[in-house]
Image 1 (cartoon, rainbow, N blue to C red):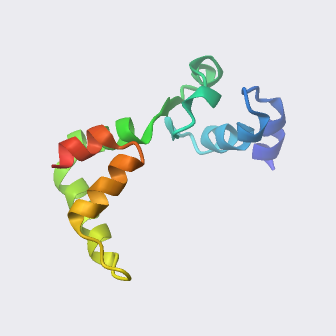
Image 2 (spheres, rainbow, N blue to C red):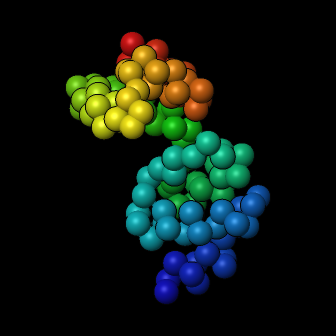
Amino acid sequence: MIRDVLKRTLILPDPNDRHVLAAAIVAHADIIVTYNLKDFPEAALHPFNIEAQHPDEFLRHLIDLAPAVVVDAVQRQQANLTNPPVTLSHLLALFERLGLVKTVAELR
């Protein structure tokens, strides 16, 4: 498969992440969304016109583009958390603990 051949040629700080970049290249992705930004340096991604973004940055961009869609998705996620039930406040607190601090500020 092309992705497997490509994977062997890519150079990243952590070789175990090469499959992520290979998949992004094959899929013609513009962005890799990851908490692990240090393992996807700009110099390695630039030749493929791909950018690594922290999930908080990515979600803030989505809020800018379609705030009602994002709010609806968060509300549906909260409604689906039934065993045990999770309040919207608790869900947002979880998002904050996951590093989505700016996203939560926007959602509030």
